Amino acid sequence: MTPTHEQEETINSPSSSSPNLGVRGRGSGGDLQTDNVRSDTAQTRSPFPRQETNATLPPYASTTAVPVYISSDWQEACSVGRAKAYLLLLASFSKLIDQVRRTSSCISLEHSMNEVSRVQAANDSTPSPSDSEGPLLEEYRVALFVEMAVRRFGYWQERLLALKSTALPPLDVLLVWATYLGSPVWYHDDSVLGGTTHPESAFPDFPLELVIACIDPDTLDYQPVDPGEWKAATGTPFDPIVHFESSTSAAINCPRCRTKFSWPWISEGGKGYAQCLFVAKCPTTNCRLQIDKEAIGVERLARRIVDMYDRSNCQLA
Image (tube, rainbow, N blue to C red; front, side, top):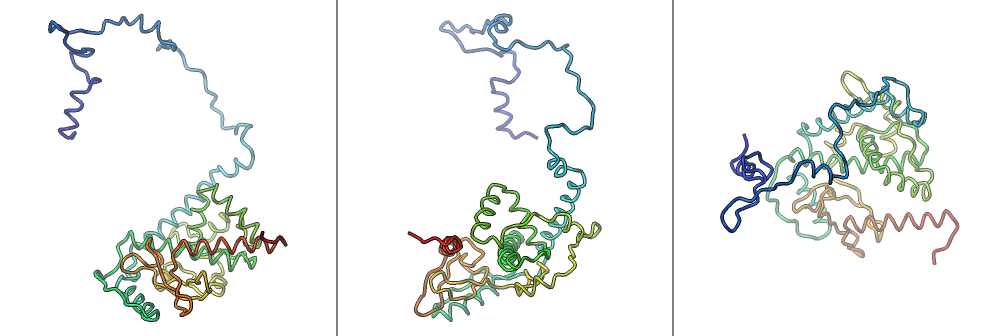
């Protein structure tokens, strides 16, 4: 049903059908002045003459042949089998996200505040009181899960690709990888940069066929042959749900002194590592650097530049 104000706008609209269509207003004598533009004059002035309604449409060839201007690579990428494979992969991703929404063992704000209190006590800081406790809402669970998946994607690139490993990564890492491919310009630029600074960690082609072979089409479960290499290299569970339920904090390296310490994923006030107001303090007594995402990003960029110059045997100006 159309709201009252929308009905009034429709009735009073100049384009609405009414007996007074084309009325401009009242003249000085109170008579109505109407547009007397002839239809044939309007057609004469139009630069695009109207096509006759009985004109026949051009014939269309009903053929299944692939046009010659489409390369063989495009034909393979757009094949029916490949489209079905992508749909199966997306269905497996969807099931994974649904499991994240339904899990009841995810991090609670109360648990995270206890973690913050422990870290702040080690830093001689006063922990802030918690105003709200209990499990995270569904949208927060998904956001936290994605943040963890991005970290695990970095582990896969740094610790497995660098070892020339051909083992398939966990499903959450594949989710980040497939999303990354959805931004081809960024993916290409980062691939070129990564191939220049760390050629051993350059991204390979997405192994769609190998991944699909490990997905059960009935249950949509992802079960690769040998997931043990992942746990040995990263120290984290291969199953993303198990990792999501058990991980409480993120490992951080201080950009100044390189001290490694942990910080909770979420905390009161939005200062957890997975939150937009993330800020932490280095626990080293002689450092005490205030660390945020910008500081971590700048340190990572500087490290890549230094590595690139070291590999090219150049000297910084």
